[in-house]
Length: 392
Ligand SMILES: Cc1cc2nc3c(=O)[nH]c(=O)nc-3n(C[C@H](O)[C@H](O)[C@H](O)COP(=O)(O)OP(=O)(O)OC[C@H]3O[C@@H](n4cnc5c(N)ncnc54)[C@H](O)[C@@H]3O)c2cc1C
Image (cartoon, rainbow, N blue to C red; front, side):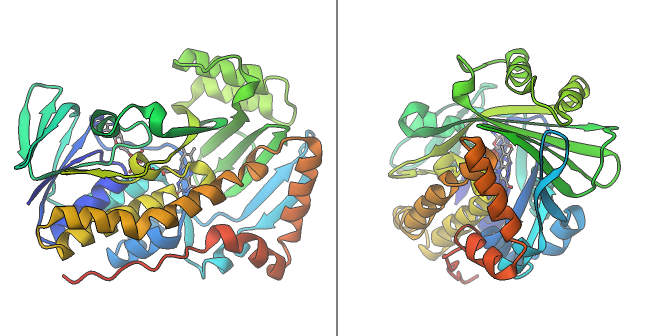
């Protein structure tokens, strides 16, 4: 069975790996000219970690990843308002927790799928399905025929738009914008510590990686802007207007923006769909059920979805309708719960008032007591999904 997969981020290469493992013939199409490099760092744990273990990728992911040491919240003079060691997170996940650049994770998975046909700089123009096949019309004029097509093309999925309908039907903006960039040579270090400063409705953070690189992260409520900035110049200006008056190191951080590498800016949204499959087309990862960065688990969930879709396709022995049904059924309520939990995390990233900031700081300091940490983290950091076992 030939399967086209649109998007070589995290879900796409994972799905390709499992399909190849089961004897299918996957082909990846990625819009970027090559695998993306650098970018923001993600926390990696839970069901995604389990899938990586099944793929025997954990040693390589660990080699390229980092063990963060501490979460630290500072006031406008840089004085520590709250802190907690990352031990609490490692303990609640039984040591199965690490941080890694999203692009590095993607590259580890893609490299593992050695020999999988991948077309870079390629994207869809449109998709046609009939009872025998799905036809993929590429922007460069090529037409390819497949048995199935899977959209693994992220939050703003083109496949979803083409086959299931406009983004507005499924995208639920959570009322925040996020921005991230990295640069070298930033003087303040605190290596492998997430150091953050908040004001009501916004947070700015820095994380120094080993070497000379620092990652910067911004999140803020969208009502702080009059309208959504749509190009990079306007997005950079928006950061200046929201964060420009904040104290701590925010001035220096905004200056780093001038020498930034890989600027990222987007709405914080979730994707909520009744069905992620339609005849011969399915969606995986953020395209299907984006939980948003607030969950801290989108990559892991994307890998779990890819694992289950591939497993169900092989279990159904060619009956793709049955496989698609099982895929949705096994994951729907789990993903809905994850989305709900993620929405409650705005209290950490962008508390509504100084009073809410104080409450958050108290909770974070209390997490230094192991029993309290377990209690507070359990809901977010334990996955109540046992991955199915598939033969083969
Ligand atoms: C700032 C930030 C912090 C985050 N932190 C965490 C975290 O701590 N832990 C965590 O697990 N997750 C985190 N996430 C979420 C995580 O990055 C996503 O959930 C995950 O990357 C989803 O994987 P995916 O493969 O579905 O989509 P993506 O990783 O977005 O990959 C989609 C791929 O499709 C390609 N593509 C897009 N359109 C097309 C097209 N038309 N044709 C062909 N290719 C296309 C893209 O170039 C990309 O390579 C964070 C996200 C952000 C923004």
